[in-house]
Length: 631
Ligand SMILES: [Zn+2]
Image 1: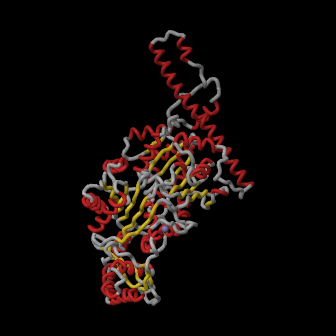
Image 2: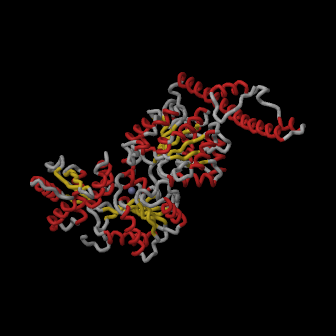
Image 3: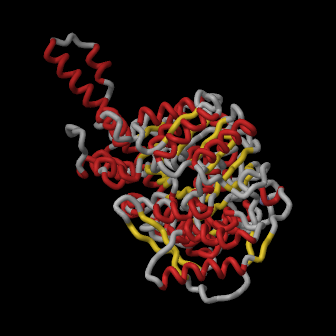
């Protein structure tokens, strides 16, 4: 006898149905046919309808159970096969970089049909192969190199559910919008959604409905905190339908990364709950220490293997070349007054990028407003500006995004809150009005330029003492922030090719000059022996320190400039760069003091203060090069 089905199946129900799924007494004859032969009174009609409704439900559940049985059998076979392979050939590698896999032709056909892609870029195909092969995969690819295709495409070739964990709603909204345009079943869970919409999505997954999303985008907070979501995922997992967990911006897991987020750290729960579901980490930048940390936190297989000869029981590690040949990096000295800096940016945009889309990154929310107003004013409205930072409400953020996308806004003056998930190809320039907190951040922010492959500019406006003091104070309490800031400052002050510095910093094997950055394009910069002035600076700091007092970088640069007036070669800007270089080289050290409003940075004698070696430095072109004056 068929038992009365309920919306919740007990183990006994499942057991019963699994054993009787093919029995004739369960797959009942079509009652509609039988009943249509009879005259039914109202009561009987009601009863038949009730039974029919129940039957429909049972059939739906039977179909799901059949599918589940199939999935379980295939998962079982997969586990056994994998174990056999591992036992027999622990060292047998797989090459994921070719196109002769069983799924290869379908992969390309789907890429062409759904995404309109004719050929794979960079390591996209290799990643898709490893994903199709159910491997743990870590992908480090520059912003704009097509990371999302690496999980979206394989998701379309599976019957299961891919969870995509990403930190920003804007990014996910964008992706879901584009995927839906292409007819892909996908969904986003966000706190701004109505509870009915959320329930609808969860219900479709819970019942493994035919219109269940293939890709479900969620924030890390939601995964970590929502028990309902986890229980729904557990169901999909048990049914063998949880295909993969994708962690976008995976560097956020690690405190050694540059954008640590506590909720990302808790994502370790995913591997614990869903041990056999493959995990994929995606990021634009990841150093080797942070990589190990991220693998550990996400519970991925700890050692990595290269995609060309991928060993079993390892995480397959893909790393696309970092260099973007179409980006022209340059550093310009910034005038000391804010108004002059704003005028400089306005004339730069009008001279080089009139009408082009761009971003001007500012350090604070307040700066974004001042900058936007100033650019509009200095260009008499020819530069159409918008403002973006984390304090804006969602509607305003959305408006700025949308207007920028259509060109109604030409330049967005933004904090670093603007960027993740921007999918705009024709960004022709990214100007930084001040340094970033780290090279990781700077690389990621500038990576938003030129995604369409056309030449684009990444300009950093730099003012040594002011930038170092300001960012140092802002990040004084962050672990590891000082070393990161020093790397950023070295980039700004270096005489080497900008792209080579980035490549070296990110452990790239190829570090030859790019040929297009300001260092590669200009004649080699002038050097000067500044040993006398370095010694003077250290002496000033030591004297002040001995008196129990303290001095700021700017005051120290002033002191050196006043003393070096006889040395006409040394500009005010050079004096500032010199004192920063003395900190970077260990002649001076930073000290911080918090006030009610801010943290101030001072300098004290450093570990090499008594070292009397020669100090040489690169001299900088005066700030306004055409006037050739000391600023
Ligand atoms: Zn270069």
